Amino acid sequence: MKQGWVCLAILGSAWAAGCGPLHERGEAWQQYYASPAGETTSEVVERKKIIHWAANVGERKCLGILEKGRIRLKGSREWHETYAILNPAGTARIGFVNETGAFFRYDREGERVRVGEYPIFTTGLKVFFGLPLAENLALEDFDLYEE
Image (tube, rainbow, N blue to C red):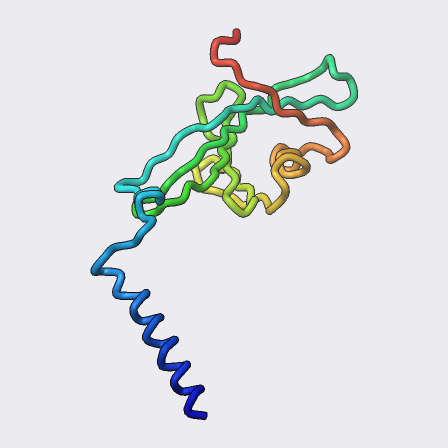
């Protein structure tokens, strides 16, 4: 029984010697971490046209623009994805999708109205625009200089 206490005391002293207070020597790997954001920043990552057609591919119509962005809040180290849905001209936001996949539409007064929570690319955009699920929807690259 006495040997067990001796082994425990040796292990305890070895642990205490190796794990001193962090404020005295700092974290060993802190140079590899991103520093916390000093202010909230956001940026647009990509833009895609939302294209719809029922049966004939030749009758394609642009319903709007899906803008993927990312935001980093003040004091945070992580980026969060955001999605904004803009009108076909790209001049006004008509809705957005939050991180959990909940779709919101802006009404005439500018208040957000919850549409529902769906996977973005399979059903969410169809429900947002009030389209039947059997119809086709595609995302195409957005060219700023296209006529």
